[in-house]
Length: 229
Image (cartoon, rainbow, N blue to C red):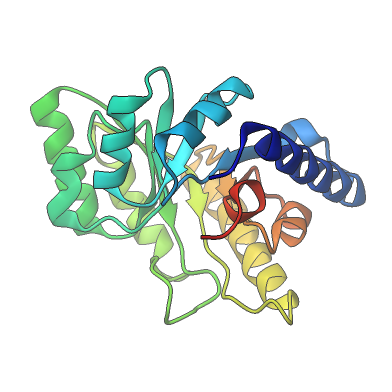
């Protein structure tokens, strides 16, 4: 089990990585939010994050996150793992934002659940910007249509885009290309639909430098903070 002191040392290291990447990209560190990804770790890890000043963590699985929510209060939770449409009813009211919305069917299910619960839901549209067959997400070409549909819903609030780059640690230009495509797509759609789309959730432990270079506003980090299991 990771100690809180070890976590703090890891956090300092990651924050320094972000600062250096921002310096190289000519950006301010305050422009990039760090989202701790706590999947597969016990609720004590959430407490570490809370003690370090974080008010939000990312989880991949609905059931695991809900169990932790019962153990640790006063935190916000973002779903960053794939969400099946038949489980949409289980997330409304449990998560502050869903980052992995990639189909009209899922949006319909979320809208229906929001209406039943008289709540709004903040989302990001997940885009397969790297055209990786192993990744979820709508296509680059299909994002405009998906955005139009999402914007037509009354209870859905689209705040930006999200992507997971293809896994290619030996060639980070692959990630750089995917991130640049998402940034360009966001800029184009923002102009076309006259919406802000302020959040660009892209970049993880291995490719955070490339993501920040491309304009990421949120880095999702797990292993660099908590280690590998």
